[in-house]
Length: 472
Image (cartoon, rainbow, N blue to C red):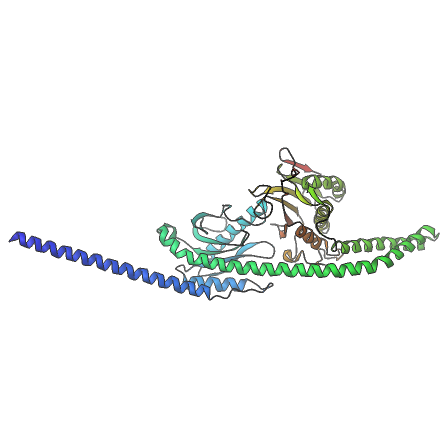
């Protein structure tokens, strides 16, 4: 009898266990369905977000919309979006539900990214590392420890916004305190919709930047046509004015007339220099290109200008890493590029109010080689030469507009305001990139990247030897 009861109890237990297992499967299915519906709703919300931007639009409003939508539709309730500013800075543009300490920590993390970029190149490349611990294909965990601004540790997951060329132009961030201990699968499922949103936002930012570059190129093209016409129209009468002024200065015996004529000669020569600058915008590209050793060119320029700068109380420092390959380009145009950058830096230091010592008035030219590609693959995915010309002056008033035609660099207005526009044009001719930014706590810098010359058929010009420093 007891045996029958035992069997019956076993049958009931097995039946109960089966029901429990069935109930568990049902609950798992319900949870899975709920998760899938939430993901679909999240994806539909992201797909419906209008991220179109005009070329000159402010991205702060878009950053606010993105942050609020992430906080509303994702599993994360503390969100933020970081963007680049016109001067190359990187910071939180908007956030939702995120405490101020985490925002400050994100800004410090972004400052570190920018600092690393300026030492190693314009824009961190995809897969270069240094962004944090990778938790998904394009998501990095960043743990903020105690810093000078933050008293307690915080954590965040950062999703970089990459351009098609692999440059970081922004980032999405979500608060991740305690979330890094959850299962990897659950974390990946929560992050992949945000990665999809990141791709969409990155394309919008990249398209806006491309539109801005196209507008600038159109402005420069229009300026080139106008400048050429003006230069030719002014050239002949200016030659006559200069010739007669020199004739009067050399033939008159009256001191006052001679002094006035010399003033006319001096100002006419300045005007002719301006006309020649205007004509530079009409130079056909691709003429006289060859191998150019930028290190050698910078050394020559330092020797020629060092004594003059020293007489003005300015110290010139030239640095290279000893392994800088040559670039392919027009030597005359690249020399112009360096001269304009050096002249702008010297003007910034000369215009500083108050007395400064040679230790404080410094122009620094640094050259380095970037990228892991071979010389046979120049460009964004190959090796690049990185040039930075920096000064310890007051900095740029508007770093984002420094390359616009007739942008005045000095308060006095003495400059024709075309030097950096011409630099932009020269760099574009050579397939490179140029950016301007301010330094902390003071100073300014212009960074240039140029593709390395192809090694096939000719050997790249290279400076052999160890790293060196030349101080003039």
